[in-house]
Length: 447
Image (cartoon, rainbow, N blue to C red; front, side):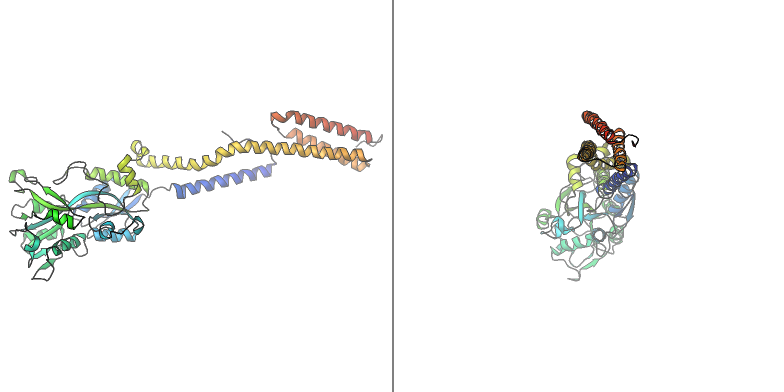
């Protein structure tokens, strides 16, 4: 469909086209700027300690996103609490947050408007691993009173949850000689193996190098708590899971019996202004990274929209109901983005152009007809003037010039076929008025 030709004077025609181009350019700019901006090519993720599971997850995300042309910058941190601070401050757009530390777990009255952060999914179980040399804490953590306990680095989610759990058994720092050692990860594991601490409380995924190191050391005891169900009811962000006998190393029968563990979940959290295309890309990466089975989960159990510590994002809700957007299922990432943006650009254009195509021809026809009717009016006025008096020579000359102008305009203008009979009638009336003028011209004075 093309625009009809505008039969206007050249200057006015150019002005009309310039105005139309400016309007369309403005609509395109609004669509590009606000409706469908391109996603950034760099994304910042706050992970965790470089020897921890969060950072290892981040490295895999980095590799997957690189294949789609997105550069993922990894910022190591002390853990989930520092990740929350960075996300709230905007220095990171995505990060891992430990279950029990997010706003929905710490503030029962929180609403989506209470935070700029959104959860994409829970991505892993994070059991509470309690390792000792010979201490039996199965009947309760009160057995750790007066001992040296590695609870995690200062300000970390590990430290916060470990202290909450110990306080449930009335075990507190500097009480009865109890010492909290602020170390985590492989540093805490080293302290335990060297007998510099009596116990380690480590909240991490089973893939964490420190957890793997301690699980495979047959000299250590992994606590199986009798009260896991009660503790999970007391602290809703916990749930009970079981590490089955022989799951770590069947040949050495590690562990030698089923171990009942408390576990929370790791949340993949983003800022709410994250570009939707990147949210879907992160969710697809999460599916690749976290869907494999581990010591404590079945295949396909994660990522999951359940038990998140932040309101679930709109993209995550659609992803878990319908999967990836249609275009991203069949096209490379950036090709899908460009096609999607092109379609969104065409929507406002179609909204303007389709009605314009319908209205503009009618407007042009109305304009042509109005010009025809104005010529009729001019001609009628001239005819009445001729009938009312005798014109002078100069007036007759101007009248002839007016008739010639009217006739020339009629000839130059392309009128619709349906009013062609009126055009011919008007030309006949021009000839009629010209004949009346000729009868008033005295011999020898015809202009």
